Every structure is written in C-alpha cells, then in structure tokens.
Length: 238
Image 1 (cartoon, rainbow, N blue to C red):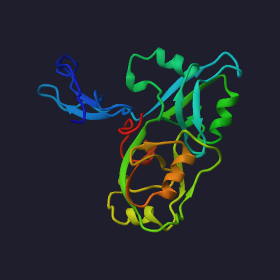
Image 2 (spheres, rainbow, N blue to C red):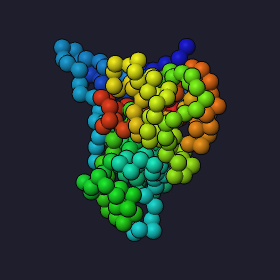
Image 3 (cartoon, helix red, strand yellow):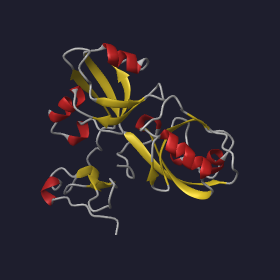
Image 4 (tube, one colour):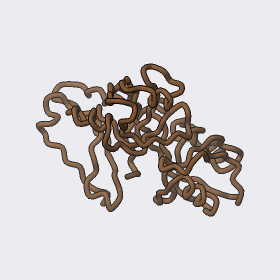
C-alpha cells in the first residue's frame, strides 16, 4: 500500500484535469505526488500546469525579509530550501491557484529578467519580478564499486538544499549514465542529491553517506525543470 488520492468528479468533469495530486497516507515524513491526466467528456486533455512562471514581489525596504532560505551553490539557479514569513509568503497568500504559488524545492532563475548575479539583485531590490521554475525529481539506482569518488561537489557552506554535483568524474555516476539511453534519467552536473537509500540530510551528511556506502544504493536527485523534459514537485522528499 503506497497511499491514496481523491479527486471529486466535479473537479474535472467539465474541463478535465492534468496535474499532480498529493498522495495521502504515504507514510511518516513522506510527501509524495501522483500525476493524473483526465479528459473531459468528448474533449482533449487540458494543458499541464506551468513549470515556469513570474511572480511580482515587494518589500517595504531592504531590511525587510523576502522570506526565502536559498541554497547558493549553483550560481545559475538559486534553490529555495524554505519559504517563510516575508514578501514571498505574502504573495502566496494572494494566490488561489496552487500552481502559481512559490514553494520549497523551486528554483529562482531570473530577477527582473536578469539571469546573472541573482542573489545580489535580490538583495538590492525592494520590488522585483522573479522567475520561478519547478523542480524535476529523479530516483536512480547506482553501484559503488571502488572506495574513492572522483566526482566534485559544491562545498561553499553546509547546505540544507542537498549535495550539488559539480563534476561527474570517472566513477559510479558515469558508469550509471553509460547504461541509460534517456538523458533525462542520467545524472547531470548541477543535480542536487537530496536522499540516499531514503535517508535525507544536509550536504555534509550526504557526502559522508556517499563516501561510506558500498555496493548498490538508491539516490534521489532534483534539478531545475528547464534542464529536463518536464517539471513536477518532488515525489520523495518532505
């Protein structure tokens, strides 16, 4: 038993449904989603939710909080580890559409149309148009055959946003990729490892797990949906 999903007929019998629903009774500490596509009578599938959208946020002055905890190891994408009280939380409170709310696991990819110096631009602004992109989640089974790991990881600070793979190296990541024809389920530079064998931790804890693990193991990664074919909420992380 993996859990259950409920969707009332009135929610989709006129226009259909194409999106994700939370999985109830999935287990303690597990937040999972299922994708559903339902056609309306004599109609076609509706379009899926946007994986990229802009939000307009404003704060009173630079001393007021935006309300985002950001992981900054990847300079091209700011990973949102947490949304707390502040301008983004206030924006969310005005949105009836859940698909347009900013949530943890999203990525910031542009500030006022600028895709560089994201953190500095946010720090200097009191009003901004921020481009948000959903996360893509991938689960993989890898095998560690040697004790050493030649991959390089982001180590600026201990991060709650996972362990960022900077370079794949000539190790288990490359060996796994060589067995996969679909590029969207291959390990990519810039991926964030968030769990190993179902165990979650910060970047330092995850790297220790990788160093000590032996044989086959499951790893869960997330990446910005613009780097993959589709975007969805994480299916294996709370």
